[in-house]
Image 1: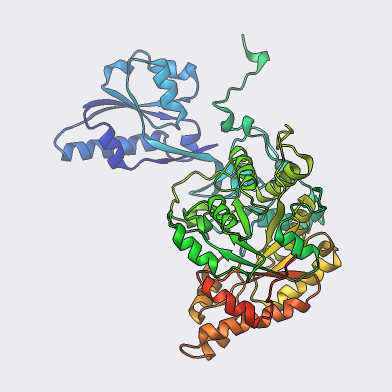
Image 2: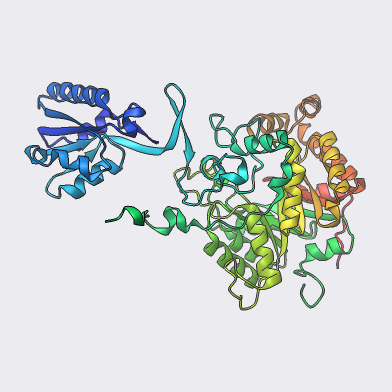
Length: 222
Length: 312
């Protein structure tokens, strides 16, 4: 799923310094699962903003809304009757949300309240890690299901580099050297020879490098 | 292969092909456009080494480009070993720079992944890594031997580079290092320069494997030597440089030398290493990385008995 972090309160306050009446829209998708933009987080942010603005002597009116998903026009439609009653709309969804909203309602201003970070999962309660870089051409079968593009700091297809030490990346002790894991797994399985195969330079057109991407499923297009 | 039978015809290639024990040095370009400073540093190496590595934004700190500094060396009659990292350029820029470097008379290049920009003075930058060091080696070989760009288009006069790669026998996972070296040689590396060696028993083991696997028949391996200036430097490298193996015994030895004498002890250790490398099966030479100590190279070369350098 998509993992995001809440923006600092100060940054959000600054964005909406000139407005007095906002709609705060949460999302029941990924951001609910990663505890950053679901019902509870909408309520917390709403209270925090109100308190801060009250202190600053410029009270803020907030309408709290929770949509099924903000990456689907069907659900975006649910605020069509109300969106223009506010000075601005704040989205608590990933970066997709405010854009779908903005495209559906050209007359309104939409602001993000989270920083969208990566595709990954929770490795333990409260800790999420990146797993996929969305390069558009999955190659993890060459690496026993582990992705060096997303997880090696240098995206090496022929790792590990000389900076791998004690299973950690040279960039930080907090980063696992995925190449160390790939090699160990291959060794355990007695298939180290797999890693002697030369991989040609990757075609990055399927990644973001080829420009913004579209996925079309003909059978679903009406 | 070019008409004269050499891959690039560089001095380094000729020295190695003739069976001489090669001796290469290193010179980091200045943090600015100070050509005089570069010239002063590189002049210490004249006549002392077969080629001079010119680092490419080493440790991810911006410096004069390795291609420009290498070209300045060529103009001064010195032979550079032009380093290129995958961190800062995509395949377009890399191929363009390889052509440019070759057209300026550069004949050796060392293909590296490069330190992550996190270490350097522009940690905010985007990291490129369009291709990795293995793919860079193969790309330079393709440009040289097939006369083709990475996309298979023909090159109008291909760059004939003597291709180098790095190997770190001490980084983890240690068991894999020899295979990674083998892959780099398969990809097209003509010569290898290793990471600084301090743990001699481990390096002996590594070289034995390289010889047993036949790797030394297909590429020249130059052993990396960086003389320690002090026990403090040794401790720093042991602790903070990833993939560096500095044995406690060496730190003790430097400390034991006493104040003011640690640098001399560091040089002595380096000379002992070079003496052993000369005899070690499979080692074709030494790459001396006297970091910001270029003026010491003549003394080390003299005492290590590698002078005069062969004229081939």
